[in-house]
Amino acid sequence: TDRKQVIIRFAVGIRLAPDVSRDLKKKYPEHVFLPDRVILHSATPRLVRMLGYILDDLPAALEESKEIYLARI
Image 1 (cartoon, rainbow, N blue to C red):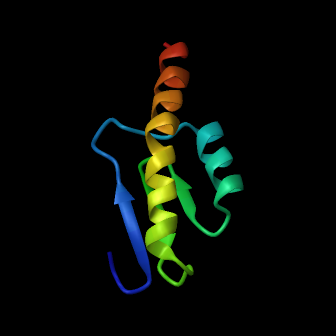
Image 2 (image 1 turned 90 degrees about the horizontal axis):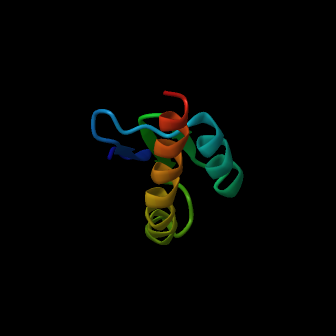
């Protein structure tokens, strides 16, 4: 984290599929969802609560991404 944002980086080989990133962006428009990381802007009111919501959604999003990538193989 720095003073302007909180960054959640995924482990090597863990990625969000583009469709999943787009869905998360619609749900949380003030934040950035990239294939290998999530960037939360620290100026967001109730940042800790928002972080909790996003962390709750990430496991399912990553599982969906895994299924999308495996289907392409």
